Length: 89
Image 1: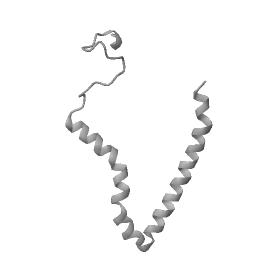
Image 2: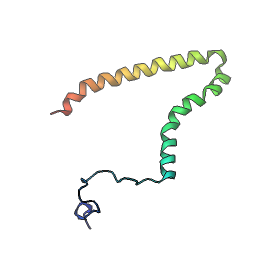
Image 3: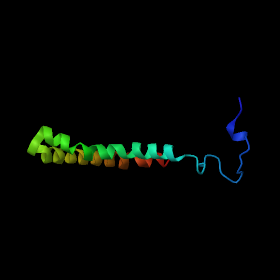
Image 4: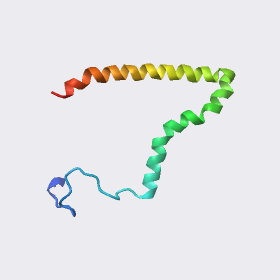
């Protein structure tokens, strides 16, 4: 079994663990971009479907969801404040 770290690289001045430039081609980059934006676009594109099911109550459903997400964010914020000092030791 060979150790990858012992192999010589083409660019010896580059540090171990650094990213290779131009490693992704256009199709891979496009697929990654679509995958990253899809959760955000789902919330935007589902509005007509939600309106067809909830009617005039759609705005109330989105308001309720926003308030619930704010509670989640505040909980994560408190968790991060209390657990981050443990990482500094």
